[in-house]
Length: 298
Image (cartoon, rainbow, N blue to C red; front, top):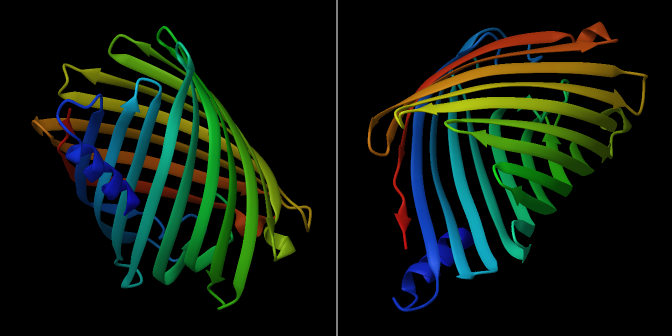
């Protein structure tokens, strides 16, 4: 809730102060269908419901220094298992302008998730947890050159997991991301390359991986937004010689009904290939929902 505190601080500053802020609460409510509960679950198709209140803020304390933060609480219901999930995600950070168009950034993220039934963790098929506690530090650079944005980020994280067997597991990860994006009129495109290494108390969960992601989007008249994305991951596990390829694709259109209210839909497909057929899996996913958001700016 620190993000809320910082945002309230911004609203409380005198009107004459050289401070600019944006406070944006939002609420997403929707339902989805998946051909499996999660990738590799082998449970069967399931309907799901979700409610996600969130709050985001930006606070410019000077022309060179900005604070930002976000908080999100996601509640989920799962028909296949009559299970529930509750997750809380908090992010706080600051950006400092080093030169024209060049910003240094650092953020700290925290996550807490509880599930009444185990679900997959991240992009690693086969690792399932009923409780996850995690934190990460994420330094980076952002460089604007005209309509182009170049980003270089690192992430250093720690997670404490409670597996479906009841066994506690701690893991540590380090990742690097290089991305480039460009705005082309009403369209935008971004490409990201990511490398990650994760070491777990259970050697079978330790792996090194890499991924590439491409996203293309467009906004039509400020009323219709379209997004098409695809990504490919390769993970090599420390033990057992296991190698996985994971491919994801998604299409997400949304329509603005009135100011601040959007109807959202998406279709996604994911497939995992492994040299161990035990982990081969695929999943279709369809979502329909509504997003309500309001922004206050100074």
